[in-house]
Image (cartoon, rainbow, N blue to C red; front, side):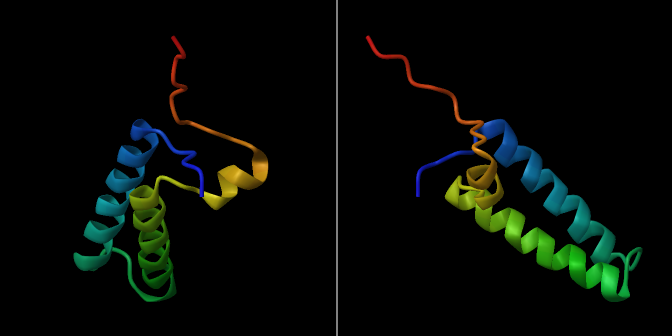
Length: 70
């Protein structure tokens, strides 16, 4: 797998995970929606740790900074 996520994208996903977790654990969001948010959070954490997003790969997107050749 070739990395296709930049640092800013990874940080944004982690922040979203923290918000979802706070909503779920405070009881603001419960039931099916709460479970869905937790599953989505797990996907966001996994893609952030791997720096690879399968959806980006399908659409040919890449948010990694390009390395300059000297």
